[in-house]
Length: 113
Ligand code: AMP
Image (cartoon, rainbow, N blue to C red; front, side, top):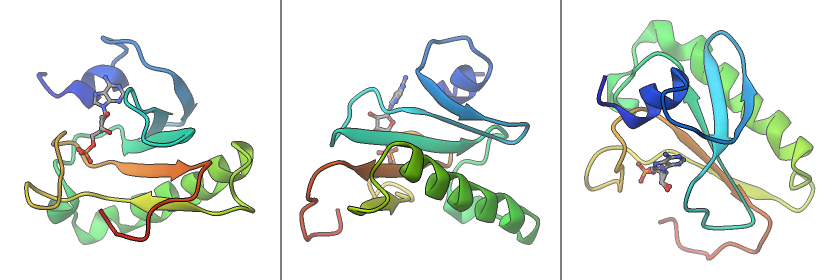
C-alpha cells in the first residue's frame, strides 16, 4: 500500500479528518491554497477520474453532496468556493488516488488552474 491517500484512509499516516463514512473520507490539505482547503476522497483506491465506471456514479454524487455540506459547515457556502478534480499528469494530478479539492475562504483567481 504505497498510496499516500490509502495510508490516510487506513490511519497509517496522520491527517486532520473532517468527515468520514463507510465510502468517503475528507481531510484538510497539508499545503492549503486558501483558508479552507479540503480533500474529499473515496476510501476505495480509484486512481483518477479516468478510472471511474458507471457503478461509481452514485459514489461521485455522494462526494459532491458531502462537499456541499462541508462548504456549509466551513462557512464558505454563501460567499462561494471551488470544487476541483485534477486528472492525470497534464491536469496537474500529483496524487494518483481520486480526490476533489474544496477550496474557499478567499477570492480565487479567474483562471481554472
Ligand atoms: P493533486 O495535485 O490534485 O493531486 O493534489 C494533491 C493534493 O494532496 C495537494 O494539494 C497536496 O497538498 C495534498 N496532499 C499531499 N499529501 C498530503 C497529506 N499527507 N495530507 C493532506 N494533503 C496532502
